[in-house]
Image (cartoon, rainbow, N blue to C red; front, side):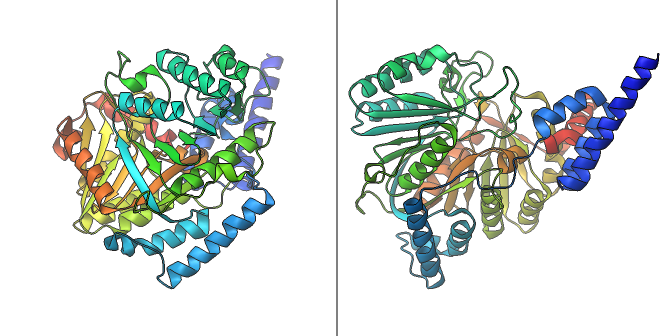
Length: 482
């Protein structure tokens, strides 16, 4: 009995210590603080373990360190472009996108997101088409192939990609493959053997130093980028696995959105990859002009910014860009996301837009892939519906696209979901496209997807079973730490 009492006293003291840490030292926002306090006090032992694994914060310091020349070049470019914005000297081939110069300025100031205007964009919504195009570009590569993916699987697609990469490495092309240690936790080490034997290199992002325990489980590289010869870039939602080709029996067809980019926007992807690689790998990549080739202005006429965000930065750049876009909307907002766990600022922006007469439409998957995240997502829909937002549940397979289109003029496609994890915890990157033709295509894709969706009305939502309401309530309490 005495042993039990001593153990209970020790656990109580640990909980009090952690509570003090959460409240006074880490200075989290109120909702996150209350969520952790609930976990610590209601499930003390398990809550303590969960906090060690999930609750640690990345120290607010600059994880990424550019080489001196790179830092000076980027800072000079950003300062020059900020002056051009103030003097209305930026190049806009599409005059209707000039209205978003304040957003461009914000992304320059807070995220070093250089604006480029000589880009072309190809949109993929089918995994087979995306990977056929990617592998064809890999086979045509001449100097380097840089990849970073959150999930990589040793399956048919994964082995097909690895074969193509190993063949190019054997030809003398530089191949560097960065993968996330948690997202690809089931990936066997033998997967990269053909690439290593051919002279390529791989690295894991934030790997565990303790077997089977990774204390950085929250801070993951969720980016999906490929850069080929510094001229072609891929960015979007597709990871590497057979399910992304629609071959998973549970999910069926996989509906995602990915962009293939040519132009100077690719150089921003390249800079981000180099920083990611230098953070994760032992061998640093030095500045090489072959990574940043001079690209002709004839490639395209689309304006773009590539915006990166992560837990080490002061601002939540991608979330702030979403909010800026939403408040700028006059006619339509079309949003697709697999997970929807917004903070108060994003919810307020959406409700104000709808209450102001903007046609706000959000599309979510109708089937879950993460239990708590799915029910937490649905807990927010009632507020949106009551404010006049139209909600659609995609039923033809699984919706994994991360897109936002405003007024058919400006759009975002990238790796960030509309949830707290993507905004605050994960390392993400989104392409913000200032072009009416591209935005109109993405809006048309959204409208086509509504044919494969059912609309969720207030009447249907309010008639949901009691058990669903309980699942939503419990998940909603935990949503700040999901």
